[in-house]
Length: 271
Image 1 (cartoon, rainbow, N blue to C red):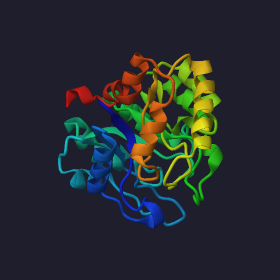
Image 2: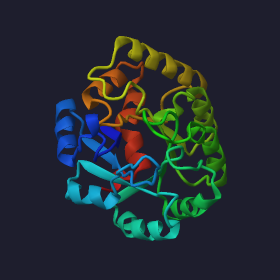
Image 3: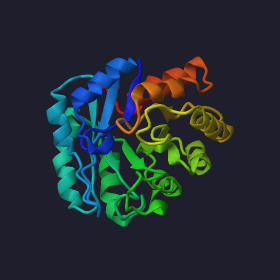
Image 4: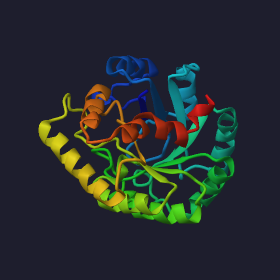
């Protein structure tokens, strides 16, 4: 089984083409991917971003079991109201996690305004996905706010929350690896590494990816706390999967990276 733990829909296609769940399912069929998680991105940023809400995704999903949904919290809106809106979906299993976007919005992961979110997620056993690393080209966000170091503080304050570092902290992969090695409750998805919207992943970029992951493993010891993710539609799922499959992994790591970690982190065994 292969699960892509990081995808999007909406106006994220090349040249701002609006992509849909139907487009994603077509891509999954082409890449032989069994399930994808779609991350809502309804956030407030200065550059007129048009995000997609969790409700938008749920409507398009139409209960297709190959698609799972991650809600999001925007720090620029009423936090309590957003949590109340998400709670019923979380309790029914329609939403399996919450994503936040430090860097894109003006905050980092330790912002005091977010403490109710972490308390909510700890109480309901909801995993939290936090953007780390590079911001999308053309973004007006603050890069330093997406550094993975602050995640270690959250992992210490809320040890019962499972935290996923989106994009494994790239370019700060060494720092991300140290946090993952230290904190049992922190994982990383390996999405969003290559050049956005390129039709093919170059041999040079694959070599760079393999070198970064070698350095990562030098600290963590293995890839057992990583999840396969692409950040589709910024990348071809088929190309990204092929690049991931070229990483040196034993059978146990492959099962964890490509499916078992996502099943555990997002509670997909309940489905």
